[in-house]
Length: 111
Image 1 (cartoon, helix red, strand yellow):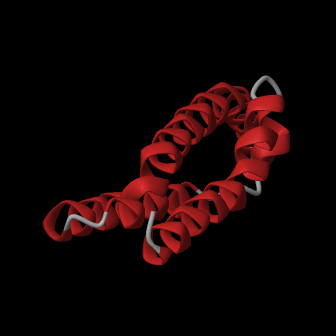
Image 2 (cartoon, rainbow, N blue to C red):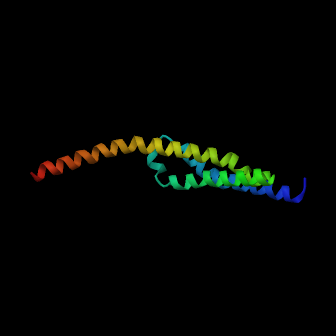
């Protein structure tokens, strides 16, 4: 294997390792949405977009290692988005109902 391939492979491993702690945190706390509040949906979308762009670049230039991190990171980011949306939906409905009741109680009290 030539030097450029080794550098690309090392870069791929580092890109995957960079995302691994957040993926682990998300999976570990998937049943506790309150612990996932600090994770941004926008950043996960950017990870997917980044993976797609580098994947296209890799396909056009036959440079596999430039797109390889996206093979792992994009599905992890997609799973993170699904877990975040599920958690926000579950807590959002409960919080929303509490907020509506509190608003209704204040509105009634002001009459």
